[in-house]
Image (cartoon, rainbow, N blue to C red; front, side, top):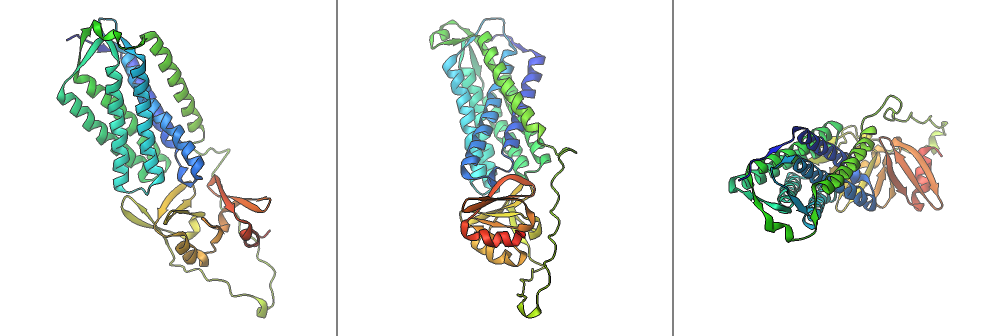
Length: 375
């Protein structure tokens, strides 16, 4: 076996890339469930590239720091395949997280897929080495795989138990730690032997060329990290939107002509599920209820929560609280509306805390909503 070591500065750089990729991917998907399906798919695609590309970049930055006494190169096609595997598997995990109800089982499944992708990407990337062959041990492979899956499940559960800023930061740290730890656990169980015949399999990728590719990938991840981070925390210049002031009361009308308004039930609470447990919300804190198959999604500020009610049941229960059916798939709390726009024969609203969300208003519901907004 050949003796080898690692450049500590490149090890630190690899860890930084993994952290930035984890933060970028997890923060990009924050609030994605509240987006229309097409936009949600686009956001998930970008997040998969960030997470999968981060796994790949971290691995090859660390491999550039691998110091062997012999020359070695990489097979270009195998190196590309390792990147595609990482991106596709993280994309599959994100699809499960954002297109299926989040339960303990779905979180564990998504984490296991990410963990399997990390380990698979590592060993595919290692198999592309030319002029030098890696030799694995069974305990090394088993330990890396178990650690990869366990740490990834933990990171996903932290990041998706709640979609708050703290959870995303801790989840990103868990993701970065999982990628780095799996790499070096696997390397601890790997030896290297010279193999001059292995260089005739495909187009060679020299370390210099690989360094350029990895540098470009790291630059893209760093840029995405900066763009995500600049809007992640609220700033004094852009504080979170305050609740709109209540509309002035209309002038009194004769008692005999005044309709009897619905009386909100002070005990009414909206159930939502998280990690197999049920919690309850004050309806006044919810801005939008959106149909999701036989269930609904609640928008509370920047959070999107899973509710077991159907849209019809939610409409019936929340009518006394002032919610309006503005579209076949949307209930709206008029008190949380921050913008209304007329679009030919339909309309569109934005709500407090989730201004990027566009709530459609169908033509037949325009008049009712305009009356509720005092327009």
